[in-house]
Length: 488
Image (cartoon, rainbow, N blue to C red; front, side, top):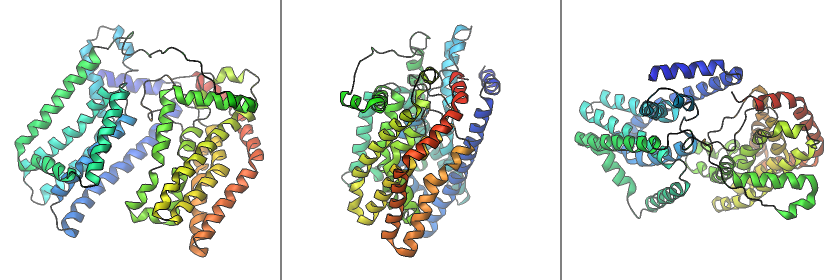
């Protein structure tokens, strides 16, 4: 039965009306998966031999020590990205197929996602290297099984937390507390983690703990899904009582104010758009990566980080214009909607948030004014240049976004094509190259000033650029409408 389900999914993919777009997305996704596979396999070799030869420590103990950090990161990542595949299951509920079979298939399918099995490549490679270097076969086998099963537990935790945001927030606060206790050495969290995970190798019978937890959470997840597994209950789109709200002062700005008002309401009301706000907040901490590797301290990478720290909302929101309006975009195009004001409203909203991000990024001045000035220049560039190119790239984004979907916040599909990729050159590569070159030849002041000047020029020429963007939106208008009407 499971093989039949997979065959139907393959047929569904090739028979969809958007086969070309889906195929392109699959190719890009495959390239990304191959890249991460290579990184994880290479990382296993690097971790083992660096710890063994350079640090003269036990690689298995050191890796076990930091597995708690990776496990927590994996849990957070899966909660944000991985979704329960319910949509393709709905048609089978009207057929003579056991619900138990369908629920088990859904659970098994979560393990087929790259989010689930990619990290296993690291553990498999690391285990093979350890066996090659004389570690006990039984110990390595139980260590691999124990660690893998604990990571697969995150699939079930993700399912149980789905649609339970208050519990998820509580767990997030708990995780933050544990991280803080470990970071400030109040509680030796890493030492406890090392002892726990290393016990799978040193005491093979410990694997029973992992097996028991895995089996128990499978059963709990199964029951949780099974009890609501009905078209008119657990799988239906939840409806809430509509609320009327209005941000009055924006109305005095005419059509632009009305559009901004509508976008703010959308951001506040829908799960998908709330995820944009949450993601934008996390982007503010992207600059912390500069302390984890010397690579991020190069001028080009500092500018790269500055663009993301100050432009998180811009990149997450702007490139999905007009996809966020896909549900009523065809109707909107039949009305006398002023296209330029529609674009400018999005532009103002993005830049207001970018300006706030620049102010919040002031905390990076603690690590040096050079870092903050770089981020400040990146913020000005985002306002003057990237905001417009991001909206421009949105004209080629024809992947429909369902704001009422139960998908994960960051799990919405996004369409990429050659034109969108080419627009990355002025958005990312140009400021990185200019900043790195100016700083190398003339110093940090010249680098900051050069990027700021380009941003100011873009800001002053915004009306001309808006005319170009509107022209492209009008060229793509009918193909966009057709794409938004076809959900397949």
